[in-house]
Length: 377
Image (cartoon, rainbow, N blue to C red):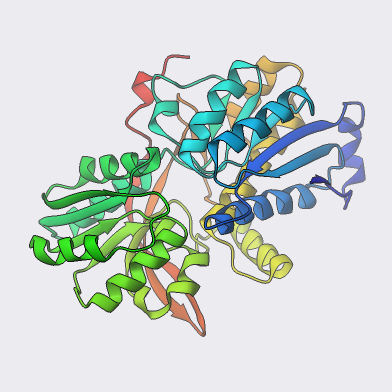
């Protein structure tokens, strides 16, 4: 479907843009199946920022990749060759990003990632037209490893799906965890039955569990883990304990510690306004995915306000400047176009009838990623 932002306000501010041709943004994201909630949140956050900007010159073409790499590639080809998009965004899953991003930037398109940040695109495979507005895949898991060490855990059992983001997850955790591993498992992407893995955890002698299982995978694991009675403390990234997931998991998630670069209680005016406006428009609390979509759109808008998108060097420099108000507060890109930012420690709580998170500490401060030194632009 095609959506075009509506002119809301700030007509005088739009005058400078009127002389430009319409800017086309191609958004390929997951809008159906088990991971749909993530893509829907990215889309809704992105479109909210465009609506609030009051710009009418940005056309967003939105397509559902169905979490299938071949479909994502077909959609990208159509957007680049037929729709003639200027910028691409939206992909949630790292295996889809690896299928789409290298080809898109090779054809001179800018890609602004609101989520997937595989290590292969942060290091030697970086590109001057690729920007990640969320994180490098390892980052939240590195924060979890640092927290687990600080909490005194000595023997962790770790598991994640066997795809690029899952591999980055366990690599990131191990990079900052100072203890030993009682077990390490790669599960199937999309798996819903974790009886065998939970049995291995029970028998392992571990004192804690770290897992990265986004979307429906995390819901299934947490419910089964709670029912198993294993009872070991669980640590994970926000992807497994985020707003959309928590309502489905319920009490099984209460008290669980997780790490994130964002939460709704980060204290700055932009974040407070985002949480209030997103909640009012969509009748639900935003997730970190929604915040990432919102920030991605605002980065794009900030670059368009200071540079002509047809002047690639100037537009790239405007993106690198990251001169926008982020929901995270201070925002800056490292030399490989990935964020340098705080990674927070959150605890799952209940506010009335709603399960959510609160920040209880900071795991890593102004943290970059391990691959930036390998990036040669």
